[in-house]
Length: 260
Length: 118
Image (cartoon, rainbow over all chains, first blue to last red; front, side):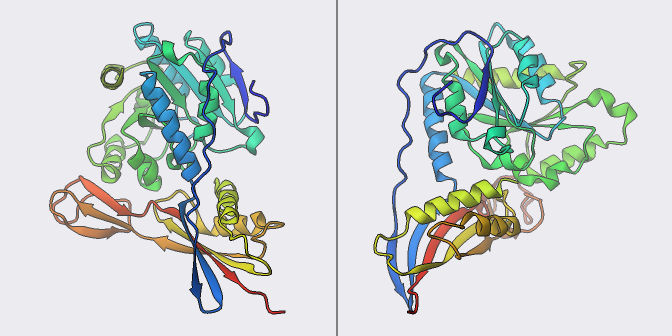
């Protein structure tokens, strides 16, 4: 554990002393210019509220590029099947592709315990000491990545906190983002959470094995996805039965190959 | 959902932007731009901001939010329009290749400082 670190992390492999040199948080530039305006002074600021996070994310991205690994940020609402999807995905691409996982949850290490069974190194982040943050931010990823041997990884998958709102707003230095939507949710999730579906590069429509038992209209859901994000690849999968996995795995391997 | 974190960040940036010669002056307002696509609820943010400014140099300051509409342009036919429902398809040529010109803002524009009457 890093001294003074407020994030709880659990490591699933023997800690090695990687990445001794680490980035310092750069001080944000000051752009304040005073102007006179009838009795009141207006001080120009013009800064993105999240610019500290965005700079940190860029640093992460540079580090990941140097180390030659592909980083995927996986997001969804709680219970859509992210963890099972990742377990099955890793089982199919390992050991050919060297994988590692960072998993974010408000509490518990249940997801990390499950993912560690794949044999991939897993770092669990619990955001509860931050008051239960609903998303992962770039500096948390930077700290978690210290625990991984980035030289020995081709593919880093980050399972974000289950939430369709906030994670979409926070860049963490990933190369690509995918969203998991399960058929036990409403078809209209894409139009209710347009930012998430716009920000992601592909969508996984999960639990399709349950379609015969549900009123879920699959075509309607896909139409909604394409209304918000025209041309978005949609992979219809069942993480339980692994039906539909081939196109998804091909897409993913292709993305990894392009980067690594 | 993360409005308190955003509010604290705003207070931090605004405080760091205050001039050294503030003296008796008081911060009256922080002017913020929020795009309609940003994952931030203005009402919640105002509520959190009022809590976050307590015991800071910004105490009593008002958060003025300028909501920015989502404006897109079509990469194929150059049409330009305001998106007010979650449909990101060109109204003229049905193309899905768009550029989002505004609507993702989450920016602090300025701070307003007033001299206190003695």
